[in-house]
Picture 1 (cartoon, rainbow, N blue to C red):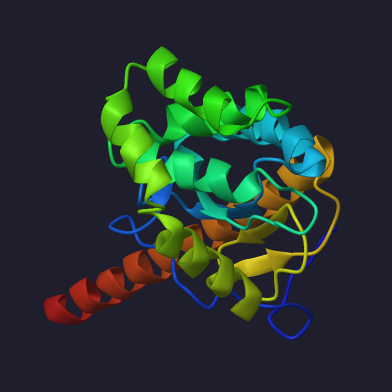
Picture 2 (cartoon, rainbow, N blue to C red):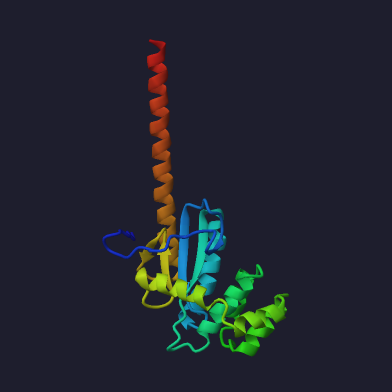
Amino acid sequence: MIKMTQIETAELTLPVSSERDHTLGSDTAPVTLVEYGDYECPYCGRAYPIIKRIHKHLGDNLRFVFRNFPITQSHPHAQHAAEAAEAAGAQNRFWEMHDHLYEHQQNLDDDNLMQYASVLGMDTARFGDELARHVYADRVREDFMSGIRSGVNGTPTFYINEIRYDYSWDEKTLLTAIEQILEDSSNHQSSKKKRATAGARRKMGKSRL
C-alpha cells in the first residue's frame, strides 16, 4: 500500500486555481493530479496516454492540471512548444494543442507549431505574432519557478492533492495510488455523515424530553 505524507515528500507551493491553471475535470473532484511536464521530454510522452486513460477511467473523480516545466538544456524546442500551448490557450485551444504536441513530439520546430495552429482552427496570424514576441514566456517561467519551489527536479513530476508523488507512474501504480486516496476520502465523508446523523438524533431525543 502506498502512503504519502507531508513529512516524507514535498508540497505544491502554488495552489491550483481554475482562474490561473489549465484544468480538465470538475473543480469539486476529490482528487487533483498536477503534472509538471515538458513537451519534448520522452518520459512525458510516455506518461501522456497513461494520464489520458486514468482520467477516462476515473471520470468526475479526477481533475487534471498541466504546468510547464521545459528543460531547455536538453530539449531545445520545449520552451517554444510551451509558449505555443499557452498561445493556444488564449484562443481556448490549450488542451487540443497540448494533445497535439505530445502526439507529434518529434516535430516541434516553429514551422510545425504554425501548422498545428492551423490544423486546430486557430487565428494563425495572432498565434505566430505572439510566438515571435514571446508573449507567454513569463507565464511559462512562472510555472517553471513554481515547480522549482515545489521540489520538481525532472519531468514528468506529479502531485496528488498538492503532495508530490514520488513513486512509479506506470498506469497500475499511479491508478492504485489515486484510487486509494479516493477510498480514504469516501470513508472520511461517510464517517462525517454518520457523526452528523448521530448528533442530530441526540438533539431530537433531548427535545422530546
